[in-house]
Length: 324
Length: 296
Image 1 (tube, rainbow over the protein chains, first blue to last red):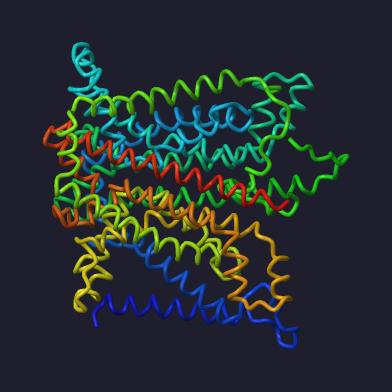
Image 2 (image 1 turned 135 degrees about the vertical axis):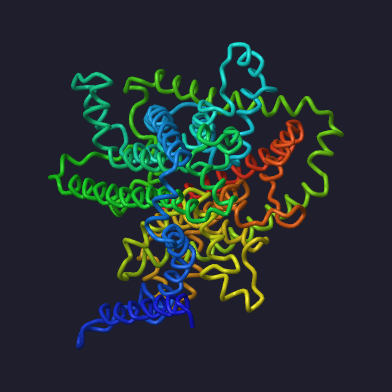
């Protein structure tokens, strides 16, 4: 029995204890009527299903996350800090931040504009436009990177012209930004479209009728309604922008200290068997992911509060449902 | 409409479709501006690069193209990519449904945390997932050390690819099925019970048909994502030609040898497959809309 055996044993025991406590806590108080069976399963089935689901999540989601931090801290805080505190790592962090600072606002403006025109109007080709926005979800990031190499690379369409004017896009920062923009542009639009569709046009139309300008309507009517969805879209877009690997890997050229983002830096360190340093850099991205999930949970909760508050308003004159 | 639960930002797609299309046309300003900007942006970011890829393919003659996309090593990579993606999507189908079911129907401690964690693969960079899964499953890892004596090797072979793809695809199934399950009507199940159906019959004949479109959409999305996945797979795959080399890696390999034409040819094959999958997903979503829209 070594340390890791004990660790595994402890984890299993903890799960068991949690399950037993949960089972006891949720048991119906004595003397209460038996549970209604019409729309749920017997208690043992429920707990079996919950147990299997939790085990799956533990194995496939929690364990990998825990492994990042454990591996990063394997040789103590000192080694962790040394892994991060070197010029190449700082350069990678700076480049990653720069990329996100450019890519996320670009996609924010695009996302809002695309969501506005898709959610608020009916027009021909809307389904096609929506499909186009979904494209990066199904195109391999490697193929996406290759597309930009074929446009801006030395042998690409604009390659000779760019070389003449001494502009570097591929194997330089602009290429990294472009690839990142491509991979992450659907996130904000995708988050906003269903939200804005669900809210309909009534409030905006009322504002326009009362004399508000288009911008005023957007700032004072639409934006407050979509702000939590927008926040999550932005934060998810940001996480993906900072973590993009495949597309950026194709266009970056892997020049140390110059065109390496954090994920590429992680790859190089990992391939050089600098495990602690690789996981230290990876732990930054894992922290970013955790913060993203936290903000998402808060945004969802706030959004629900918003809907509940709206539902508690005194009813207005009932409006007949229009068949359109 | 009143029965719809207060949906979270990311779960609105199912109910939103029903309510679409109300209101007068073009009363709101900004149609020209937003549509114009959207098309302009998409042209620069998507359409021009995409056409570059397609035009580059036309530089190849048909035999050259065929040779590039059908060499044994490339064909082996297709088989591997699709086989592993399919297995991973099937696993996600089962466990994604289970997790969505448990999150919607049951109460248990830590439910909020589990609900939030499901999105982890969306938020965690793929390269990080790749190295951490490798660290777990390698012969000296937390999990690998117990499996190796049993003769089970999960890293550096196709098994590892499947595991990485399960990680990547899980949220797609959960997040498409969850809102549909939340909106499903309990009255139907009560009616079925009162007519003498067993719980299993109800699941099979009442619940499953109502969530099937969403389930298939989630499956197709997880599969499409898995086919294109690169970052998490290359660390765990071992990348042996003919055995554990995925198609995106073939493209990278060709690029590193400056074989742009060959890389483009393989990329076009992947692109066509992406488009087909996208069409399938769209058709499934239309099916889902009809399904949820029909009973008022």
